[in-house]
Image 1: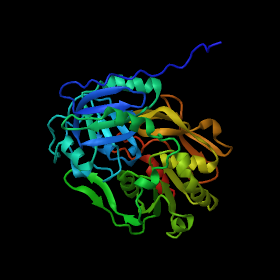
Image 2 (image 1 turned 135 degrees about the vertical axis):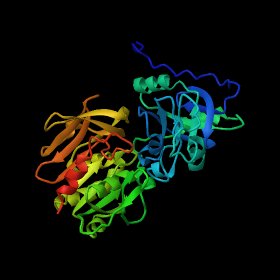
Image 3 (image 1 turned 90 degrees about the horizontal axis):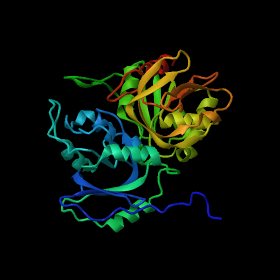
Image 4 (image 1 turned 180 degrees about the horizontal axis):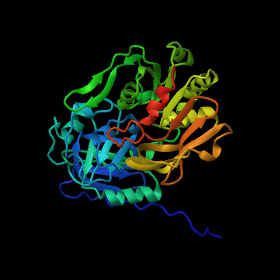
Length: 394
């Protein structure tokens, strides 16, 4: 007897190219979405996700957590304030591309140095406009984040068969370790402090501040700035730093940064280091991928999410007092709360879907959150976590 719901082969969209189309999105199921390209030329294959933020597109595109991903912006008017060097979170290895409803307009902001398309072209980031981003977002919500190729060719010439083969041949983020690709490769002190209008980023003297060693799995620079703002002296080490390397700096505490890829893959080399730190009662604070690393080190498991959480408007509730924080998020994997072992307490959870957003290890000064309390560009509800971590160091 035939199954009640036999699998249906995906329908391949028509390859007919509209007049004036200089950009295209080709999904692994054969869907083809034509538009107008901007920014860098060429093609890139990755996971298609969406971000609901209304501001901070430059910070989003330069966040290393987006390595291997192409960002669909749900807000239609991206590019209105242009681009400038101060709003970059990292110089390289952010998002592969950006999908928008409208072409970026001429910037209208006194801080703008260049247009968004000019900046994207310099950074090697491909843009695609003219897409029904609401429909694409609904598709991701219903069917999950698909693999696909974004391409921009100013002369409008594309080999769709080749692009489709790229999309179908890409293995996807599950099982992929990307932290090594985006991490700093050397060790160095971090001195940059908070940004203020007219003055830029402050330079802080380390002095007698408590020493925090930050393990860089693909960190946003504003995380280090917030550690400095909270009163720490910061040394940054690569993702692959050994336990002996970390301890050689005699840290008062260790910070575990955000980053891209599958936490289980990164955990192959990161978890043993964190477990060694826990055994020695070194204080630990983790964010995003760092949160997932702490969870794995404590004995929990991580799972890939259906669509992920990405945006600057995610409500998270604290277990200790019921207070709700509005947070910034960017993750496609999550700590499975049902696998938390005894001695690991869930401290925060998402009010969107109930997923885990924070843990603490009983009897140790070790805690982490899934969201981004450094909030660049915002919101700023969660800076207290930096103060809690740095304030508890000796």
